[in-house]
Length: 261
Image (cartoon, rainbow, N blue to C red; front, side, top):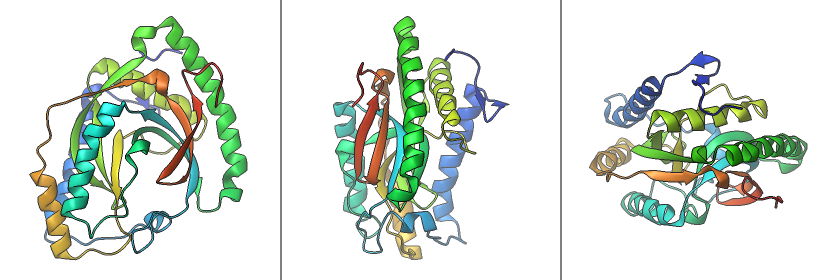
């Protein structure tokens, strides 16, 4: 294992500069589309599985690997959530519990029927445990690589599913560490897309929005003044979690623990 090696994403060489520029363009495009003359709001089927038409978070099951946030960062980021919900209460689901705020490293398995995916989740847990053990040993040898710093870009609508705050690695070093870690978990569940670092602030209601609602969303987003800040993450707090909804997560494996939960 070498987390400092040059990055390949889906077997294609990817530089730090190219990655950051691509992510920045994607996020800006998703915001600017809200201001286009031909805007229409498509409701993804995946959102209907997670949120009811009245905005209640519904049962939805799965597992994931996440980077946990420090309490002070959670409190700071929750202010952005509050502003969205205060200014646009008709667009969003019930509030997400801030105690579950996280940055996803790698999606795994999910579905509306827990019994269907339980066996696959257990397979994922076993594979993740092996990776966690290897990472724990690696960081014991290279403790200077056990932290990464992320810089926020924009708050933007992600695929009409949720409102998220997007992040990019702060330096080339951070980019290599976090992307090479992400690649490890492709051996658990291979994803056909590469990592866009984000924290989910709110889920949309699964209803079509009027042009007036979309305009208010756009005006709110361009009105955000993003402060100059960074988030420092201790990778030894990397966690394999399972969830019963988008508002209920539980820790199963934590990298820093000698004995797992």
